[in-house]
Structure formats: C-alpha cells, structure tokens
Image 1 (cartoon, rainbow, N blue to C red):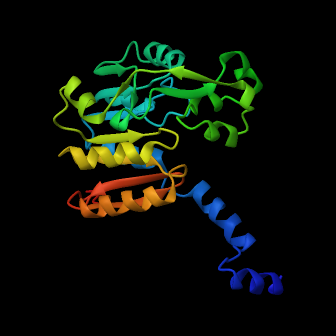
Image 2 (image 1 turned 60 degrees about the vertical axis):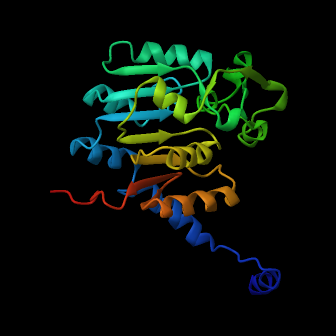
Length: 247
C-alpha cells in the first residue's frame, strides 16, 4: 500500500483513506446539518414568507419543501418542466394556499429546449428516484443506471429567471431552492448576477462541472454570501443575515 501511495504521489494523485471515506459518509448521515433542519430553523424564525422552487418534481417525492409549504403557506412559485410530474404537482398542492405553478424549465440564453427523461413505459424497471432526474444532459441519466434505449427527449417550455420574476411580480424573495440535475449552478449564477434579490439559497452541487462551480463560488463571495455544504447541497446566506442567532 505504501508503494502504491508513493507511485500515485509522483503523478499528482492522493489516495483517500478508506476510514476517512466511511467516516465522512457516516457523519453526514447523522449530522445536525441537514436541509430539513435548516428549513425548520428558517420557517420557525419566520424568515421565509416567499420562495421559488426550481425543479419541484411532483411536489412530494424527495421533496424537502413540501411539509413547510403546506404548514406555513408562504407565497410559493413552483417550477417543473416535465408534464406528467407537473400534473402530479398540481394535484398534490390543490388544497394549499398561496401556490403558483409554472410548467417550464429555467433556460439561460435559450440554450435548453428539451430534457432527457426515462420513457414512461420503462419507469417501473427503475427505482422511484428515476422520475425525479430528467436532465438536459443524457449522460446524467446513464450515470444513474438508465439504459440509453429507455431514454426519450421531451420538448419543454422554457423561461429565464428575469422572465419568471416578472411574470409573477416577485420583487422580494426569501428562499431560492434549486434541484436541476446539473443545471443548478447556472440558475443560481443568473439569479445573483442579473437581479438585486438576495434570498437564502439552497442548491444541489454534486453534478455541477468543477470549473463552473469555482466561478459560482467566487460570484457568491463577491456578492457577500457565506455558504457551507449540507450533504449534496450548498446552503448560502447573505453575510448580514444572522442565521445562527437562535434568540
């Protein structure tokens, strides 16, 4: 093992200790820092009166916000591009107040016109996570174990961030929550680059290309955001927001 480490070091690689990897996964699983706990703090402290959720899926599966939207009824704009997911989203929130639904994908500079997804005929061949991973990148689905022959393209409606905000007259925003299967970084970057809104931001980072992620981090820092990792997500908050003041 020592010889392997020395050889890998010569080529600029560093082997990760097995215990480090296992312990990291273990602490992440049981850590207090979960999206659920952070949302609970924000809503209990009445920090969230309005929110936008990008990639709302069906409003139930793997959805961290569902509980809080139904309990606290903040003004909520829920964005979901895939038609069958959108119909389920509409049904799941039919008895909830202050909800507006947008059947579109966020597209920067009109670069997206369709998404890849699993053909509904083959969904039962996969676990229940698969309907939640449509992406602009076919490789994203393949990396999740989807067979290429089971993947189809769906033409979608698109809207950019400014258009979305104008359409729903959003001039104040408390929470921006993004799960866009790899497109998250571009969406967050557009929000903080092209608007004056500075909400709490939660976005999934694990599928973002490293070069763009570094650019996004710099932009967040330049805009006086602080942030930290929460499992597969990044939680961002403005420096002047005393988030950890529990009084």
